[in-house]
Length: 249
Ligand SMILES: O=C[C@H](O)COP(=O)(O)O
Image 1 (cartoon, rainbow, N blue to C red):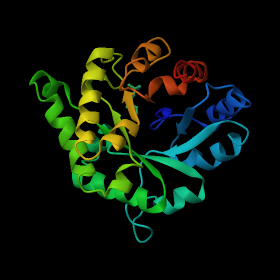
Image 2 (image 1 turned 135 degrees about the vertical axis):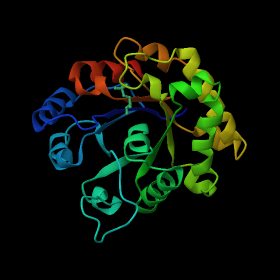
Image 3 (image 1 turned 90 degrees about the vertical axis):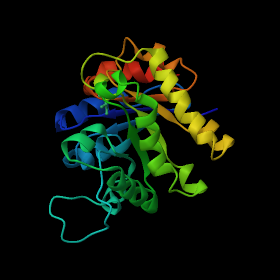
């Protein structure tokens, strides 16, 4: 059975009091067995989260990392620093990083490799824009993003990567991909992986992201190639996020 994973990406939102709310809500939480839950707050809240989540099943994630270990890179954070704060997962290639901060496939790959080198689990985010979908280029764009990274990894590294499919037009818009639309692309990603190794493809954890919420999560998560969710807006509401985690069981 594949890992079920729900990750809440707070983006540039949240507060220390929201961290405390999550700590309280998830203390001794009875989550479905085999569901892993990750909270990905902004960097300044990681230490508070590490403390507040001690008696919870919540694991920590970070939103990006610099590929370099240390040095004169003002404003940047390295994977080694994240590891010190017991961070386990890190997003790479989120569409907001690709768009707003002009991260190329090459830069995304450097970050992914750096994450693997320090023992973080990278969540590689991929997805097409609305114009690309309308032009019938969805699979081409998504497989280019997946392929650029995966083809450069060795089999053991490939096994560590989680992939999140996030159609850009569904992010923060309230317009979720239909379960069928998401399933079609995610089956395509798994089939692409199977070209390297069928066992690895079968074990690959694939997340859907894009306006997932407490109402639509169960239907999305029921699709055969959707193993979990990368949740933005709804991960800022404790009750909604808790409900999404329950739907993953
Ligand atoms: O990282 C999360 C995704 O970008 C989805 O965000 P959203 O749930 O607010 O659409």
